[in-house]
Every structure is written in structure tokens, then in C-alpha cells.
Image (cartoon, rainbow, N blue to C red):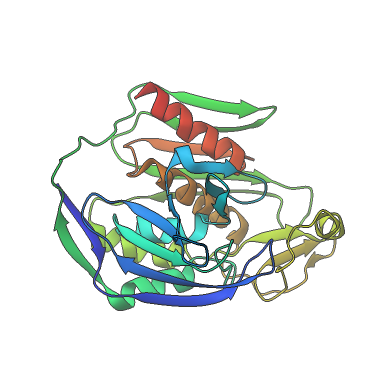
Length: 282
């Protein structure tokens, strides 16, 4: 089974959305079959945290991975970029507790991956692609996420906010069979979509110790009268960002199953619940 890793090293620094802590990330090539994994190089013995569903330790407004007392937060944008750009194996060294938010999207990560390029690898143990043969659902009130049988891997998302500038939005993205075409499509259509927040929630989140590193430079903010920091990169940029989050969370399965992933008003928590259920049933 052919896999890919980076052809070179990527270094990127920035502030974490929730912690407000500046960290530096070094992404290095990794051996075939090693998957994507984080290394906390700022801690004694440089503990390793696998980018796997079993390592998820928190899903409050971001996805956090942990092993023992060690954790790394807001991993979803970086992992989405690596997985969608075809990087199966990567050593992600980080000197702090949270991945930098950068501009609020995965655009910069995709650019850096494209700059260094990929090299093919041969995995020692070939694995059969996961194929969803029966619908798998997770729901909470009117929010849901599901995996439906399909001939190809597709991600579709819907959101609905009581703010005129957002309203009801839907978008769908297909993971193409051609790695080159799929990477380019993800990099142009999904990766640039930035994280977004609601103006009336900001004070509460800050008092709760969250979004310490958030600003109008790394997140879209929407109020009753519209966007505080236009222009948007897409007319439906918010829902495209939700697809970005979903791709990042489901990348924790290792490889994307062949299925149509459909979500509506979902969250990191529901995304991860679906991933866990997929692992239980397959």
C-alpha cells in the first residue's frame, strides 16, 4: 500500500486560539506506517501523542489530544491539511500546549505542505480501506452527524444561525481519487475558510478562560449588524470552515473511510463521537 510523507521540514510559529500561548511547530518526515503524531519537545523526555481517536481528551470548541498528563489542543486545522494533502506519516514537534491558529484557517499549512512536497512510501502492512456499508448516526436534539454508504468519500455540512449575515448555509466537498487533484481542490475550496465566532458570545468565552489568542486577525466575528471584519473569502465561508473541522476530526481515524459524511449544526464533540462509533462497528 502506497503512503506519503513530507519531502522536507516545515516550521511555523504563532499564537494558540484558546491558550494565547505562542508556540512553534516543526513538521518532519516520518517512517511508513507511523501515522501522524505530535511530540511535546518542551517537556521532559519529549512525550509522544498519537493523532488518533483514542487520544482525544477534550472537544470544547476545539479538539484536544492527550496522553497521560500531556496534551496538545486545537489540532484539527493542521491535521485536516496534512490528511487532505496526502501526508499519511508526519512527526509534528511542538513546544507548547496548542497548535498556532495562524489566520484561522488551514491555508498556510497547505501552502507550506505544497512548498516542500511529498515523497511516496511503501507500507509494510497493507490495510483494506474502511468502507461504510450501513448508516451510522450520532445526534443531539436537532444536530447530527452521520456516515452513509457511498461510492466515494464526500463531506457535506449544514449550519443555521439566527444572524442574517450567516443564516442557513450548506456546502459539500468531494475527496477525489487523484491525490494531486484532491489536494489542489482542498487547498483552494476548503482550507482558506477561517474560524468564526459570534460577537455576543465573546465576553462569556473570555471570562471562561477561552479564546485568549483570538482576534479580528485570526477569526471572523459576526454580530447583529453583520461581519465585524469583512470581506469573506467565500460567500459561505462559515460552513466551509465546518467542513474543515470535520475533515480534521475524522482524520484521527488514520485514513478516511469510503462514505458520505453528512453533518448539520454539529460540533467537535459529535464529530468525535461518530469517529468512535465507526471504530466500534468496523
